[in-house]
Length: 238
Ligand SMILES: Nc1ncnc2c1ncn2[C@@H]1O[C@H](COP(=O)(O)OP(=O)(O)O)[C@@H](O)[C@H]1O
Ligand SMILES: [Mg+2]
Picture 1 (cartoon, rainbow, N blue to C red):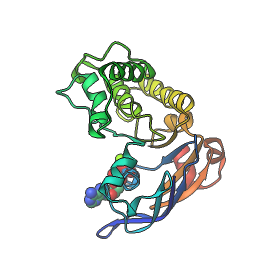
Picture 2: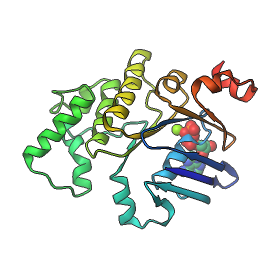
Picture 3: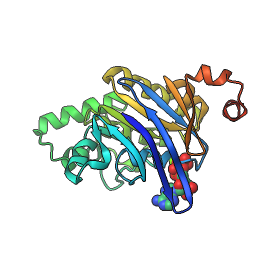
């Protein structure tokens, strides 16, 4: 996946200014930026939920801006998106939530296959035996895991995580970080994680891109950036 010189404004609010980033196969890249810096805007541009003004975004070899509705839909079946809010359907059981992406993408499976897929996805996130529960019965951390399981059921090649640990207590947050790593290794997925939780950044990132003033201000491993003697970078690690 590449984001190449992308700009995005809302009126006079220039959120992304010539932002560039690459995500290699099997790699976890964290985009680190302050609140309101444009992290969610970036992820929405990547997944085609927001149009951008300039530049090119290529996802799994396809130029996002050139895709029609049907092609975008097909691409979205290969790219998982974990909303900050989880976006689970409260009126549906966990099982129905997990099967929703299959229905949405018209992927037909026998009842037995569906059972196996739900079981596998729930095992992957450490929540076997929750299939018949309702989202309201689950804790914040469990809801995050279910949202991830719903993403995993389509076996995505890329997963986009919007602030996966925000709003979780520290222990639960570290469990989610660990889960992000487990998923990366088990399925060889590439992930773009946006966060301002420095523990999450340290534990999940192979590489960190710093989003400052709409640009990719600096890039490197957590350890490399932590040692840089630049006030704008240091601010994040202080
Ligand atoms: N749909 C929209 N219309 C207008 N402005 C928006 C929209 N979405 C985001 N913005 C603005 O873009 C900026 C970046 O927002 P966002 O990407 O949500 O920040 P964050 O880094 O916290 O995720 C903010 O100033 C926000 O007000
Ligand atoms: Mg956001």
